[in-house]
Length: 297
Ligand code: PHE
Ligand code: FE
Image 1 (cartoon, rainbow, N blue to C red):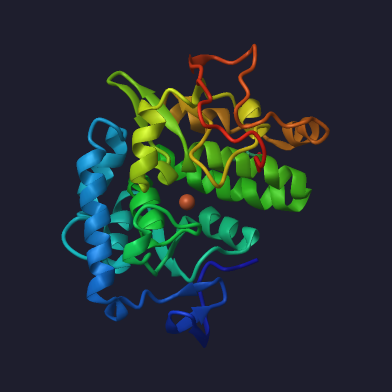
Image 2 (image 1 turned 45 degrees about the vertical axis):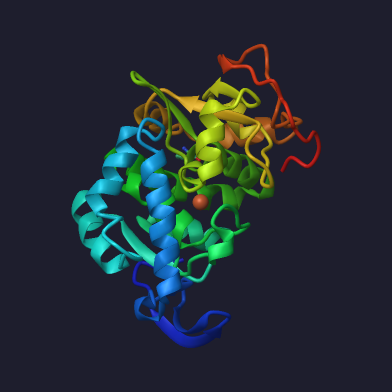
């Protein structure tokens, strides 16, 4: 699929208004259509996380937030952020209506384009919503795209996604678990202590506290095949967090061809989200307090 130049194909009436749609699911960020309420939601969520995250999020993330000036007031314009990104790592944000088909999402990442939902949650959804919105996608994912190693990891993931997609649904599931436990819910062990880098955590007040402070979840050293073979929760805080030592470690560990790994995992029974194995490097063994035992993905 050649999508290197997003091409405008039509205008489309959506739930949230009339927007130009491109072949790759890309729309124009309808910046002037944001209401004062939308900007207030951004400002509130931003202020809350900005206050909470020093000492919790890793320094690369916090530096990214500052460098973009995400707290300059109101919802940022993607065009402004893109100037910073282009110079730093060559990534580009593209606005989208919502979740994309897997292969379209992978194609964007493989071309260093990060899709960001243009719309923001309502004031009664500050603490939880079930689909990614602007705050999650932008505040959660974009700051680390300024980090060269993480930026390369995301592109490699996109390329790997195209490959997994071609291999089949089981391979895709294994790869999705890797994304979940790193890009979305990853922790990193630094000299200053355990820190957050996962976008699903940094964009959530509750989980930003829980993932580091709660005794309930396991915190286990990152091992590629272990992670790719572990189910996860989409409806509750995580039961296990996997901890990397550095972004370099993550990039190196995921560099080899996954084809033999997919073949090995095809017939294996995936571990439950809460499992702790003999072979795990355990930072914290969770108490499992309050854990649901069914419905891992
Ligand atoms: N090395 C992986 C493969 O061969 C691709 C990949 C890289 C996947 C980085 C995820 C992250 O499929
Ligand atoms: Fe996300």
